[in-house]
Length: 520
Image 1 (tube, rainbow, N blue to C red):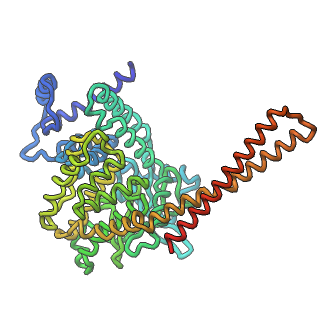
Image 2: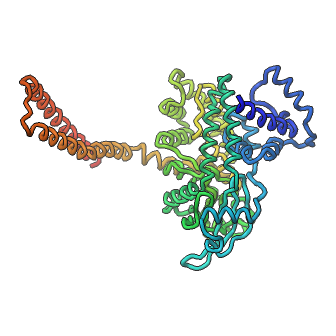
Image 3: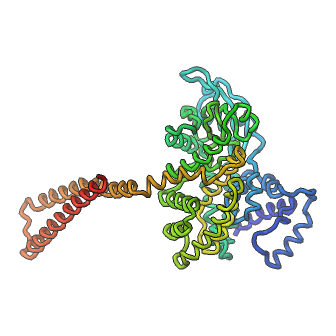
């Protein structure tokens, strides 16, 4: 009871800020009941004048409420199915920029985290060059085998974990209450959404995990010709501190500098799209915050990504779903696109595949009849969310994060090449994955992996069988006497075991012969 009251007090304060900043004047995605409409009208009495432009009302309110609400806004920018596409686009502009903590406080965090004086870890440690709700970045210098080199040092803010924990508990209270009384809230999985945000923030607050994400991405992309990530300095990295290579490239949002360097901007735009799809499909591990401020290009034209606090993962099932969905839209195979939704279990089996394919066609056909520069991934997602609600498709948080990142990546690419044809650029990467994993070669490899997995388990089975025989030998060594009926039963069981063992061995031989025949 006390906990609920404290949550209501915090939420009441948030409501006052929303009313004061004019958020209650924004359009709602669903009609409000009469009582709620009356409450909103009274709350708007304290609304301050916002002038002719009110496009940043929500962003302003969230910023005033603090770091957790800024993160909430950024997170709901990935959920246009909940807040609507208009608000989602407004939230995309929400900048996670805060005033930096004092230099002495940041230095104290670094000293405590690394367990050594600051001047022993760094040659120099400058003021913050960027500050967000969870951490801030400083430029420093470190001694390397190649001499003194610049480094970027990310430092966690003090007391940030407690502040986030309190606000996230209030968000959970709202989600649980909404799902208790609203079927639509249950379909949208608000509780799971808050839990996903909680896990994401928890990972962002352990900078060792971001370092691990950097390391994993570096390993995945080591052979990619046009993409790389900063190198991690593990000796100067801890839970509250991350030290990495300083990136001196040109940010992708500085078009004037990119043009002055003579870079091929259409080629760079295609590289942004294809790199993201390659990471998502090939690796199942992608940068989920690829806005222009996190992407740079070096003198050789290579993309460099920074800020790996928010990452996305896709399992084999989700990767296949993504590849077949994209390929279905590219090739206009709407029937197959619909079937994939049902095979993945995303659309309940009670619905008709033909009806769903018809709805998918209504999304795809208008896109294919437009010119390349008019094809919008955001428009596609708007229609897709409407269709998924119509067919009771439950929200998939991992797919929403992926889809949201695709929209951001599209925006970055179009900023470089306004005439970018998304489908033409995506088609080679998607087709390669389809042919590699769903073609004849991929199917043979899957069968071979299954067989090899079974064969790999055979030694373990034989070892356990030998141990059992040895154990039986021990218990019978001193003259264990068995009844005649037990001996007869054991004989019959032994005969069955030999029969099944022979059958299994012949089956393995036949399977191996079939695989060799198919490969040859």
